Length: 84
Image 1 (cartoon, rainbow, N blue to C red):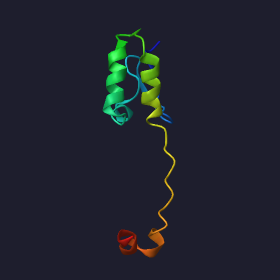
Image 2: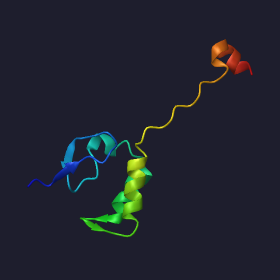
Image 3: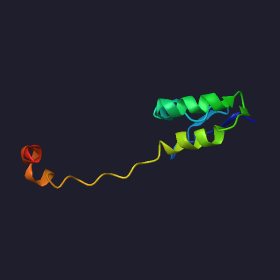
Image 4: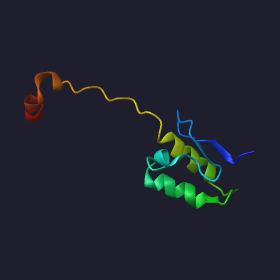
């Protein structure tokens, strides 16, 4: 049996060590304050209070964000948008 699991990032199937939450590519896309929260609540597999919330926040930070609506000024070109 291998000590691996799938990366927890949405849509990623890369296998990572059980000591890691996600693959390197996704881990460094998580905002630093959320990575720090995960580290502070993880102690070599001994889950501390707050770990589950920190873990979920890190995973959620990678979820696709809805695209913002285009500016109504874009149809008139960039110059007009800057004048208003």
